Length: 306
Ligand SMILES: [Zn+2]
Image (cartoon, rainbow, N blue to C red; front, top):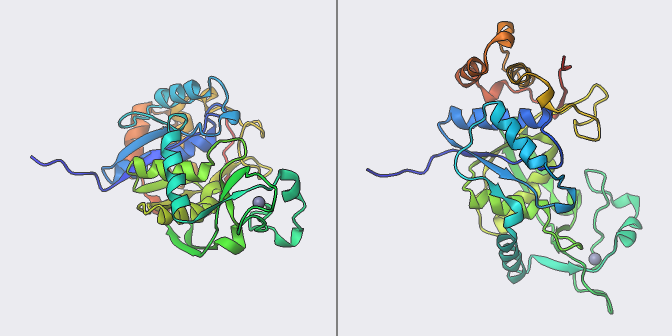
């Protein structure tokens, strides 16, 4: 008997910055249903690379919530806080290839960059000060990737995407001044290590995808397929987060919350499913999931919880 690698490996990768809210539930549900639709594996990764933002107890709370909602992940959980060696090796590979440079610029100096050179997301685009060598007498604080080339990809929900890295993003940090590896590098290294073939996540990360594809190419890693789900917002259009006082989904009965998430994802669950058991909701969801029914929007207002 031969063992075969599944053609589809998906993942859910929450950051432990607070309890699971409706937006994270949507991402978890969309990614697991799409993976199971293709008889694929579904992995879990805790994105605690940004240790200053990690909230004590948040990981336990997220895992308990996923369990209570009936999510079943495959294999062991990958913890980014244990992956520093792999990120360091990737940085060395990028150094060898000449794709990164040390940067001495302080936050204050970056704040003086003129507004005329803002990046696509409104942040200040790096002016290239240290790109061809550190200014005399300056010590490196961080490492940046040279943003080069135009990245094009087809998002399974949001459609064709194109980003000119130098114009739209600018040289970006992968090793921060505080010594921590940046999210972009950690995600790319871990997706490859976990064999992830399909990334289904919130559209708030659509703008990170071109940088991640550039890193995959520079590190000679496979490029997964991408699908970016609409992000859940409150009525004021703000992304649900602890800051916008999003209620933890734990305060809602699991079956009801899952039905609400299915509706948010355009799957049209029947009204009577609201009163069904958790197992019945999962059965319906697995039988009816269609990625092509997910609304092609970057964001949608989350249903009111009651
Ligand atoms: Zn610099």
